[in-house]
Image (cartoon, rainbow, N blue to C red; front, top):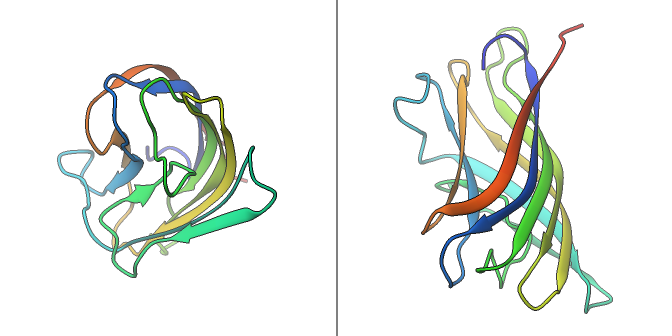
Length: 154
């Protein structure tokens, strides 16, 4: 991930392999994915739910261990849910290596409730982020398509 400063990840219909609530998470690496950072993430989600007339919000503590992408605070990602997202990651700008990400997430859970949300996330870095990882807090991804697009530097 070092050719461009910005990338777009499009996730289509990602599902988990086991029943139970889990979070869909994003992690960053500065050593080409040999290991992934587990501290200093900050994120905020604002989301709405199909059976509610109000919006909800969730944000991380000052030192979160990951970026939580799942829009729902209570449901996370459950078996038979489908999550789709469009996330832009900004890896660096000049000598500023701080990681930033933002995007839109849509999730339909097993009960056909729909969650739609926006994500903003960051991590202070001293060297360039050169790998990102998406994972579930437990279990594995059973299906889904992940596409990565580089955005040309101007």
